[in-house]
Image 1: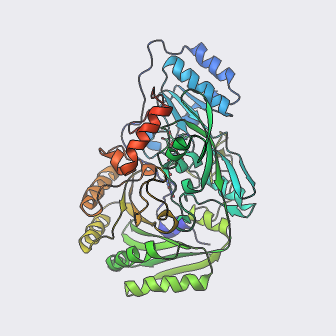
Image 2 (image 1 turned 45 degrees about the vertical axis):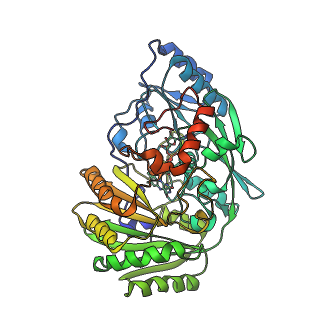
Image 3 (image 1 turned 30 degrees about the vertical axis):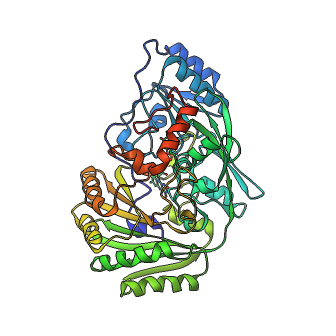
Length: 490
Ligand SMILES: Cc1cc2nc3c(=O)[nH]c(=O)nc-3n(C[C@H](O)[C@H](O)[C@H](O)COP(=O)(O)OP(=O)(O)OC[C@H]3O[C@@H](n4cnc5c(N)ncnc54)[C@H](O)[C@@H]3O)c2cc1C
């Protein structure tokens, strides 16, 4: 049995960011809430409010990213219903308490926690299916979405990390291993329920609040309201073929040159990424998934091998059931679905969970044109620098590119692939900064809002491009008082 984590030796699922300074929101109003006010809020919820001093407070306040463990919210509200969310927002308005939405807690910058009230939607995690449509609670973790939909023989295109929350992923776009065939997660979104700053629950779709629906497909979480559920168009699942090909580092330039012309233009059914790792020595790998049989997949892989000019040193190509393939991509091939969670008894956790938190920093680019020889050389020099780090290139094109850049708030439709600079723990920030800066002349200034980066200065343009102005209009219409604030908030 092989899984992505052990094969790559990149624990992309166990990482966290080490950016400095989690969002602590605005200062409390002078007449902030008294303990009795907090108690009243707790009593008024169907869900549970956890406060400093409660036994589960530390567990409740910790997000995926251990770098933000020093952040101490005044309360974490595990909302059971949209009405609970509305109660929390009324409390925040009344007392001037900063409010932060949280689903899976994977924000790279720790922007789903803060000093005020954390509105956690993890209790709203139901997944139901009928007639080609899935309704998913905003707090559902991806592993549960895949597993529950698999029981109906269907799925949605979404990310690979099992504990990422569906809300953060979808609101920022959602790049996944079947996106070239089926689109981004936000591309299969048909409607969502969202509690806006005034406490109303709106159902948004192409025909109801279409501007807010547009903004909720790539505008990024935490900006317009607290989403409570999503309805997606599903696709039928089938057997797939998984592959992982490793070349020696001496072939890295040839592999990268070949991959960037092969991967974004391959048939939609083939998705792949190119991982350039340094852990403990530099290494290059192309992995991915083909929505079809092994022989057809081998034929497509041979085209890559021909372009590289030499065969891989190791090659793994195997047919897999769809749900198992998602567990492999999640790094959970040897775990049960229950084990493929963070351990604990709070909403979003599982008593059998085995996944751990970690620390990382990351930055991103989108490549709109293939890297030149100089760009390839510059990238490989960064990977070869001392340290424990990776560059992850994920192929786009296919269905992602067939959506107009202004049709949803996610603008990077014409990008060939995403680029993520990813490093662990100490010294990590210096490396990600250096790698990002070194590649800027070769890749330009585009970034993925789901790889949110507090150090970007021109972030509006980089995340949203020409869609930034319309996003600002939607913000003004739905949150004129700016109840929802982020350091890089629309
Ligand atoms: C290990 C790892 C692997 C990843 N893999 C992928 C991948 O394969 N593809 C991909 O596209 N991305 C991937 N990501 C990035 C991921 O999509 C983003 O970090 C995403 O924002 C996480 O969503 P969340 O709900 O888990 O996080 P959270 O931290 O809970 O939320 C992220 C943002 O959305 C806001 N938010 C949360 N819930 C709500 C809500 N209900 N309503 C409104 N706003 C809300 C938060 O305030 C925060 O600003 C990965 C991240 C990690 C850490």
